[in-house]
Image (cartoon, rainbow, N blue to C red; front, top):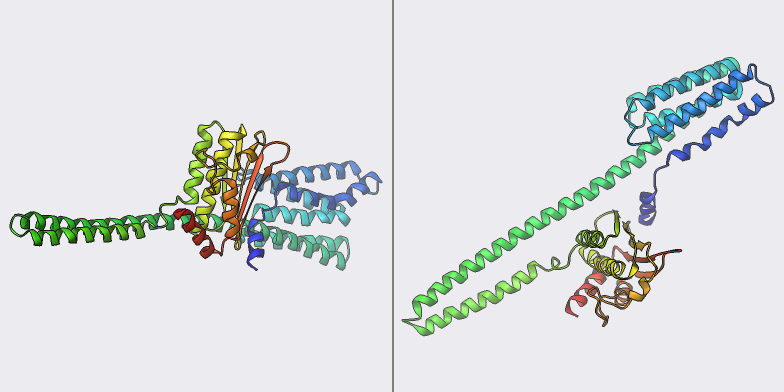
Length: 395
């Protein structure tokens, strides 16, 4: 179920071209024009041309975020409605199929506005049914009315759903960033309190040593031993406090990668989607980003590099592609600092680490040009990844 939800979340909303094929519903009307079965065919042809032009204008502008909130979509929709009613009343028959297309365009323009969408769809559905009943028959009336209502409501519902999912995804990422900032503040406060308390004790003990040293050397040595014990305990507590912070987060590595690529004159395109990941998972993916980008900068000769991170409910996928000469495989077996790999963080070592964590690392040509590096990890194996990360720290 989680995998299905992740696939649904990765689906992209229908684009402008997805609504163009619906114009084939007018094929019967066009054929009637060419067979001269329509009175005043020149007028019908002009009406079809105007309908198609207004339909495309309405759909394309309403799905363009830059023009969606301008006056163009509603004005084009009003013109489309006028042409639709004229063709429906004047010709009836198959020309009544213009009403479902008008309803579809209305759903695109008025999506998100329930107060406007409902009355408009009901009006179109009722009027199409009345016209069909007067010019056709009861069965035509019911079919056209139902189709008109359904096309508008379904289109508006689908587009609104995709927009809601996009807003929820953006909100989730913002909440994740906020959580990270709060955690950093908490960490800084804890570290301040820890060091403040420890340093206060050390200062007091040091003053005691200074006072006791001339009078009672044995007592002064005892105080000095206490200072050593406090210092060791503080060192242990500090190490525990910074556990998990020594490794840069994936967001940090992506920022560093973008900076390194820009400095090398390589266009950097970084995309990240999905829920936040466990720190151990981010640590492994951060190593992949670091190694992959280092190879791109040093060996690829590329002018463009794309880094994409997509995380779902069960797996996370990191892909690095470039348009270079495709020699990234020669970099396999080197460390990020250019030194030969000795079971460390080269691509071979990373492949072994990801495999141990239940993931995989694939690399190879990225088509006709360039190189492609793909890493995948399960997002629910924190214990395995944590053990792997800890092993890498102690290596």
